[in-house]
Image (cartoon, rainbow, N blue to C red; front, side):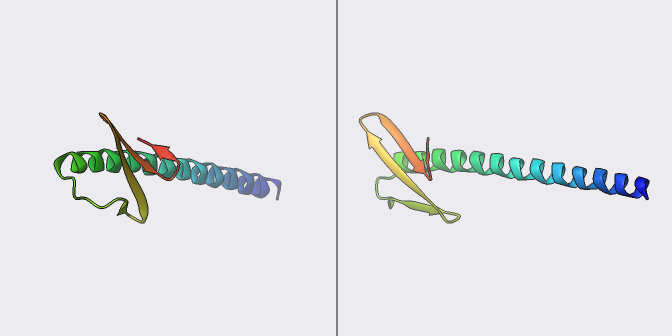
Length: 80
């Protein structure tokens, strides 16, 4: 009985650890995806000035700002 409970505890800890790791990896991928999309939007604005603002990509709004020679894209709370 004690061995079964120990095995259950170890299995539960492994599953919990894996789910936390996978969740953090998805957050990291989402951040990188936002960064890549922001840079793509900057390049699109350099090619054409007639793009809408904001641009919606996968349900997220990307706002483009240009001040002198600085280009910024804001999505959620991040600025790229």
